Amino acid sequence: MDVSEFVVAALLLELTPGHNMAYLATLSLTRGRVPSLVATIGVAFGLAVHAILAALGAAVLIQQFPMVYEALRWIGVAYLLFLAWEGWQTQAETSPVRVDLLSTAGPLFLRGFLSNVFNPKSIIFFVSVVPRFVETESGALSTPVQIAVLGSLYVAIATMVHATIVAMAVQLKPWLIDGQRRDITRRALSGALALVAVWLAWTTRR
Image (cartoon, one colour):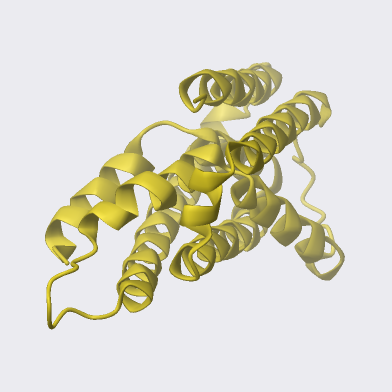
């Protein structure tokens, strides 16, 4: 189990522009740091589900039944398009009055969670990439244990990258949502999220 090579692969995947970047950046600009971090935790739990299922052998199931993968893929694409539409419609929150986080934390967590449970890029990573780093020679840890370790490492790397995106977006917020730039920025990010959904639909087809 070459951990160093796996870390590089995970970083390259997470640093590639994708829906998490667009979604969390949009959320950071419209809702601020804390709500975006709540969504980031939801994203992490969604990725953790993939890691757990991969360790339990779901990767083999998806490979044997392509329709399962196709269903998950199209649900994920549709959900991304919904988030893009919602972001396009929602006005940026610039009022100093804070929305009660207790009443919004659940939906924010759930949206982050669902956006990754049905994330085809993450599914492909656990089905096609992670098994390549599993050692099968005598003396190696069992396959489920190795996948669990690699999956935990991936979730940690992804969460670090996502939290960094949130911090950067919050720092740029005063400039990006100033005056007329507010709606332009919000809709540009929503459009980017829609394009990512279309790109994922094309690149993850089998």
